Image (cartoon, rainbow, N blue to C red; front, side, top):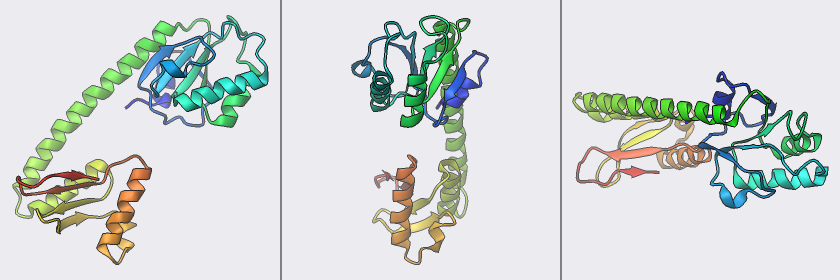
Length: 222
């Protein structure tokens, strides 16, 4: 995936005004000028706007607008400077800082098209890297499955890939191999450790993977 920090690290001139969530994932770039863009967004957008018709907005109006952006789960807002507003409005700056919305300044010399092209290039690079990683992982798992200690080898490979805890289960659900993170090893009861790890990685937005060596069994992803 591509983060707001990745976009800021491109050659495109963008300035972080408030960036409390630099790791926020950017799915695409959108342009919208209406006061409530929520119906037209799906979440994860880098939203660009010039601020037309906002010269007389009060701090309270900017706050409501920033609330809409947070509810829409935008990755960041990029406001053009040097056009409608010479600089980022203080009301918008304060609202985004208070609500935890990433806010970027887009100078006059930076076109919205160049931002879209930069994000598209980053997304394409990310997709290619993900495909390469998937092929490499598949190759490593195939090699692990041929080793004498296949279950342990598969668990080790998967744990390194997801950076989490992995259990290899038998068809009846028994654990035949595991690769626990250090914190999960502190649990005396294996089942409580499994539940704790699952809850923790769900909170982090990551996956805890449990699979089976039996082709007839269903692979489960918690």
